Structures are given as structure tokens and as C-alpha cells.
Length: 154
Image 1 (cartoon, one colour):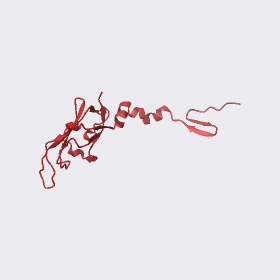
Image 2 (cartoon, one colour):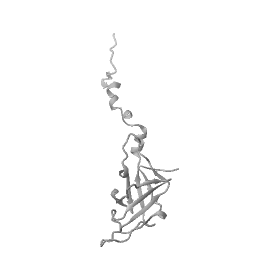
Image 3 (cartoon, one colour):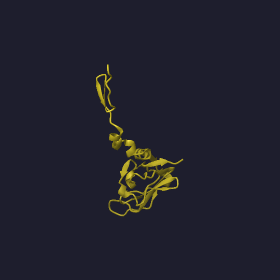
Image 4 (spheres, helix red, strand yellow):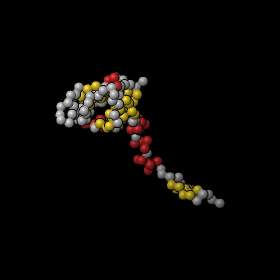
């Protein structure tokens, strides 16, 4: 009895028909070719850092009837750095971060231009108090958290 020959394109085994795609057909859809390990690791990066209370301060004073203050508040997140985007990806800038003050989300348009930024082994963040509608400068009692494309240093 002659044995039937099947191509790798179409096989039946125990009554189940299986279709295999050849390498040329699947080549355009191979995820490993579309994104590398460095890009995949960066895209999944979402770490959390807490502000160092001893660095939390501000320069604002009350300037309107709603008791919103002007000036800036700043905080340092110790032993964390912003991870730059791989060359194959666009850097999201401030959209790569979320900041919370005492559990409340701070809009990214309240970040002073150029912040957050790496400063040695730390991340510095400056907030425009009026844009964030703050009634007080940052102080040691505030819990300030940053999440996003950051990694622990050391």
C-alpha cells in the first residue's frame, strides 16, 4: 500500500486537519521581528517611587480668593531614575508618568517644563502650584508618589 504524502501545508492526523503556515507567509506577522526584547521590557515597565519627605517643599503664597497658591513645589524620589525609551520607540515625555499627592492624581500640565528629570541617582519633580490648584506647598506630611517608566538605581 502506497503511503500518502502530505505537505507541511495541510495534514490530517487522527481525523483532525491541521494547517501550518509556511515561513514566508507568517514572516510579516512574526512578533519577534516587530518588537525586540528591549522594547517589550520598556513597554511593560511601570514602577512606583515615593517622594523623600525631607525634600518636599515649595515657594508658593496665597494669591486668589480660592486660596490657590502660586509658585512651585518640588520633591525628590531617591534612588530611582527615568528609563529612556529605546530608539525604536517614541519617548512619551511626561505622558510616561503619573503623579499622586495624598492619593489625588496631578494633571501632567501642572509639571514644570522639563520635569520630572533625572538628577544623579534621583528623580526631581517640580509642580506649578497654581496649575495643580494646590492650597499648600508640599511638606513632610504629604505622600507623593510617581509611577511609570522608572527603575531603582543600584
